[in-house]
Image (cartoon, rainbow, N blue to C red):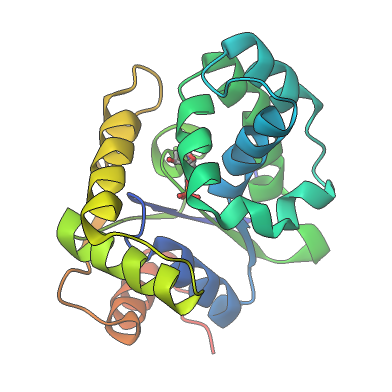
Length: 221
Ligand code: DC
């Protein structure tokens, strides 16, 4: 058991969960872990080794060797669409998920820097990684809204993108994430569903903090 307060924020790609999780963590003084970056790191390292991310042996080997303090976790290459696609392929491999589980749980139970709690965002934090989390949120938005957000983000970064391709990629990743046999993307039974289709970041944050406060008594600054 852990004395750390744990907030689980799950949801599909480009739902806004990452931005929300960072903001919630800052407001509460908690540590934050973007669990997707672990899967992205495994995907990128498999590609760099000239292997196929869908190859379970190669992916599992890389995942087992990933160190918590590895520089790859801050590598800008993790943010590319190629990394996202590779991540969703390595994420279906049970040995990869098992190898990354310990890292995620030790972060949640013993947050770095002595923080009183941890916010983890991902796909299966509330269902598999921390089923006893103190507050669980499932952040979502329609696939069209999420594709628009991703397109805007790519444009802001000067990366050329075709809108119909971004939408198709988003649908492909949704399908892989929600239909995989192990730890699929589903809301936990006790998760608070936050549909951000018609919300801006401030509105999503206000709703999240109110829910977390009602579950934990912690309201932040
Ligand atoms: O949240 P993200 O886009 O960075 O996630 C990249 C991929 O990693 C996503 O397609 C599925 C996988 N993932 C996962 O399976 N479980 C998690 N807890 C986080 C991410």
